[in-house]
Amino acid sequence: MNRFELARATSVAAALDLAAEKPGSVFKAGGIDLLDHLKEHLIEPPRLVDLKTIPELRGIGFQPDGSLAIGPLATLAQLAAHPDVRRTHAALARACGEAASPQIRNVATIGGNLLQRPRCWYYRLASYRCLKKGGDTCFAIGGENRYHTLFADGSCNAPHPSNAAMGLTALGASLVLQGGRGTRTVPADRFFTIPDNDPRRENAREPDEILIGISVPAAPGVRSTYASVKEKAAFDWPLVSTAVALRVEGGRVREARIVLGAVAPVPLRSVAAEQALLGSDFDDATIEAVATAAVASAQPLAQNGYKVELLKTLLRRTLRSLAGGDA
Ligand SMILES: Cc1cc2nc3c(=O)[nH]c(=O)nc-3n(C[C@H](O)[C@H](O)[C@H](O)COP(=O)(O)OP(=O)(O)OC[C@H]3O[C@@H](n4cnc5c(N)ncnc54)[C@H](O)[C@@H]3O)c2cc1C
Image 1 (cartoon, rainbow, N blue to C red):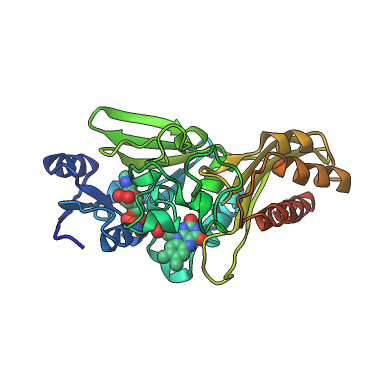
Image 2: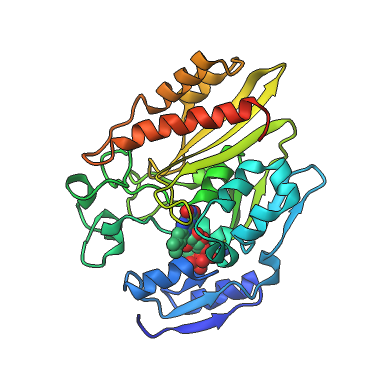
């Protein structure tokens, strides 16, 4: 770890100034992913700007229109346990509750969870100069790739690591960013970016921007959930996951958002699976068609073909649980 200053900010404006003062500074929330990066010498910033001391970035609340307003410092544990979030935005509460371990969920913030970097071991080891570090090779393609993507664009094959990103994408959330050039709002399904555009980044945040808020639309009448399969049930990143949000009227699916996780560099909306589900009453043939459609364009690597069947099974189970209206 390099020597660095720790600067505690008490407002967003002060945090932006503190970061601008020392080029190369980085923002710190819970510090879980950040400290891993420091320890591995993946980053060597001169200053950490601590966001945890900024009261305006805290809180979980509902707006008069029923939308959910989340401060980026809300912890995964707070979101998972929040009774109203569990009732109205179950996909988000469950995604947060299934991440990592209880100890980590108590410290990890939703902002840091969304902005954590991928877990690919080639990226995490300083000795591999992969695409994410400005190199010209994805070592996973010919290497150890059992945890990598099924759907990629031929460049970086590291899956997106964030559980919270799954729930937010299924629920149509937006992220609010503030930087030197002002404030902007980006929908979750455009915030996470594919490596084709630039393999060194996973999202649209500029280095000088702070994630200052998350807005999730009201979801009256929406059934949503999140589910995953992990190697170690107690704590782990998922092998495959899904977040699903459905509007069901008269027993038939009228609107559907189906997001596939741990299989692509972004939380991946499967339009083919959504189309297969629309209009159905959750009959077995349709559920099978949805599972098949979701993986139709999968391109497994040498060691991760098992993820195809795992994902299909997870989708079948998840849709059956939503059919019963118990989620
Ligand atoms: C054993 C283990 C298992 C795990 N399993 C899972 C899992 O199953 N699912 C999952 O999703 N995650 C998992 N994680 C990852 C963990 O949830 C994340 O590391 C954590 O959520 C990061 O949050 P943080 O608040 O500590 O962020 P930090 O480490 O402080 O920050 C992470 C990154 O985000 C930036 N950042 C943070 N907040 C802001 C902000 N408001 N504005 C701008 N930049 C910001 C930081 O600069 C840094 O680059 C696991 C971690 C461990 C150690």
